[in-house]
Image 1 (spheres, protein in one colour):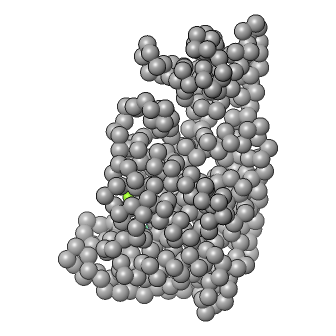
Image 2: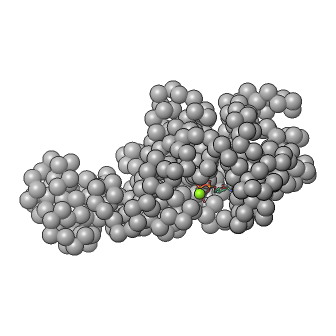
Image 3: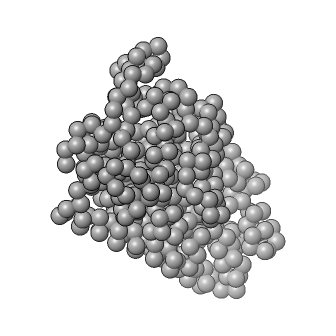
Length: 395
Ligand SMILES: Nc1ncnc2c1ncn2[C@@H]1O[C@H](COP(=O)(O)OP(=O)(O)OP(=O)(O)O)[C@@H](O)[C@H]1O
Ligand SMILES: [Mg+2]
């Protein structure tokens, strides 16, 4: 549908240059989203796929385990869009207090992402609304350590920013002037809460959560309220909105890989919403990504369950010592990268018993020592990380 530009331009000063900054109209789109024909079918397919993901997450023997692994996979992928070189095993090593072989700032950035998501989830569980204050709190965590710490963590920006280009004058896009950010974000917050008081009516109330997430993500990126981290926070916003809106009991849908794989198109569609009001093309792209990603996550969950069953059966076959080996395997299922002393502690067995059991797992090709150290040896459950990594290069 053709709507022309979906906002106004305001003169603003950036880096000593006067630029045309874009101030988006509040959501929802006017005229309303065209949900006719094929689009309705795409929405239903995406909704169905999400429903499957939601139910499989509940059917898993240990849903928390899947969440733990999947959140970390997402943190790595989402941070890679920004250019961070850290891998999933780097993050897990870092969480073990072991220094991985990548720049500190990179792995800290990934770890911050996990912290931001966990903070958001914890606040929602307390009954705190998904509001601008929560987004600022999450931004604080996202930027708290490493490279972002000088980028006004937890605060909306007070200066003009721009996207693409070497200077403001040749930017691909100039987001709203700083003095407009607060008002734009308040309008977005109102839309998220479903009481959009826009002239076109109260579409926010009745709009399916998936569409709301699709629109809110673009609006957030267009406002670009923070000095940095807008992409990561905007991606987290999608996961939290779907959870908060009741379509996913756990925050398990992450479009980072999809956006990364289609980056040029993703940016182009963001542009086209602004310049041509083409919300429909964006919504189609978004829903396609939701379906693909949700089905992919269901596959991943299934394959992890299969792996655990196969490996458990193999260990049961080793005979007398299998009880301790099973305990150690169980610990590795919860933490696919773990030091021997931690394994002993969580499995409730002595260090020598843990070492011996781990050796059996290593001989069976299930576990592998990672560091080559004699002390503080760290073992990794390779097949587990490989499944998480598939398609994402997160290892
Ligand atoms: N042309 C555009 N119009 C609107 N938003 C855009 C455009 N190009 C990129 N963006 C958004 O800006 C984000 C990058 O902004 P920023 O650097 O603040 O976030 P980040 O989290 O540090 O980076 P990244 O998303 O690359 O990981 C992109 O992820 C995208 O969502
Ligand atoms: Mg950035």
